[in-house]
Length: 209
Image (cartoon, rainbow, N blue to C red):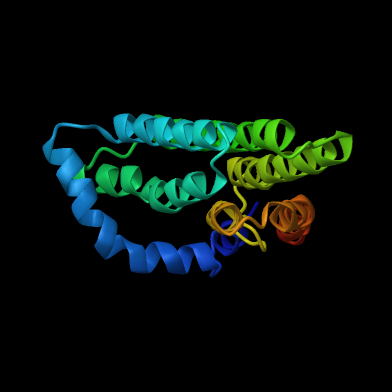
């Protein structure tokens, strides 16, 4: 890959999640500073965030989707706090970025697991709903994987309809207003559309390699 090509692939592309992160920074930066003043490291904050997602999944599994949705709405945006704290304290590291990405995948696993238990335990879900949940979870993981793999190869890959922020936002809204099945259909379809968008985005960058 030529230097010009590499520079081109590093271009940032606008997304809804980037916009949300921009306006949320003034809100969550004080939170990051406060946690830092308590002696917490960015990696510790990441692990605390994972625990919060675990609580969301548990509340959902116990049959309280609206409460789980509100918890997700509150704790979901806190995903940016560990990064803000790392930059504020000058503690950014490759391992921290790796840990954060890994924890994000487990967070989604907790949410979808809780949703699965809820639907089977309280809504009489069957194999059709199982396929729907599996498609939504697999698509979500593929969206993240395509970006991680592309960036490991030196490409930019932040495009697509449903980045992680959008997925969590849609899921929180669906839980709060009891639009679970419509939201699952949206996730089951559009996550795969997003993954395919990223494949073609990387393909366009790879021409001339």
